Length: 111
Length: 110
Image (cartoon, rainbow over all chains, first blue to last red; front, side):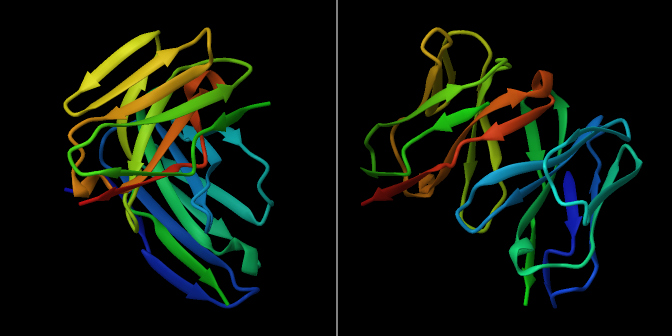
């Protein structure tokens, strides 16, 4: 059983489009995240939710909007995609501080 | 602000021992973690140190010295499958999230 699952795994889209990535965790964790990993493998936190409430919102363009309908789901919607948004986006969840379980990643390519 | 420094690349021979160092600067300390990531895969949790000293998990050990703002990951009896990127990370926002270093690419050769 997949613990943190995100879809789609691969996404190729044109500049200017709007796209969403969905994430679900079946671990019962209270905290969920979105991380972005660039081509140099730098992993940077974007958002963190705890029990559906936004607790961390790093310096991310407001074209990126997370939504947490319940504590098991955290989706990421991206408006007006730009070339620089091409990256791997990882959803993750955490049962406790400092231990994070990552999903398999969503490879986004903007052309 | 925060910063984490770790070597960008390390090469070692199968069966050997390798140590990956991490130094950090952070305004509030909520522990030092280590993650492994194979190419094309997701980061996976390896180890966590909240207090000074050594934590051992099988072939992997992690060490922390809070007074030196320093830690390391020790990998023993290296295997080819240990070739991966290794990230140190510090807790932020009371530990509710992690800031990651830029990662160390470990290549294990025969």
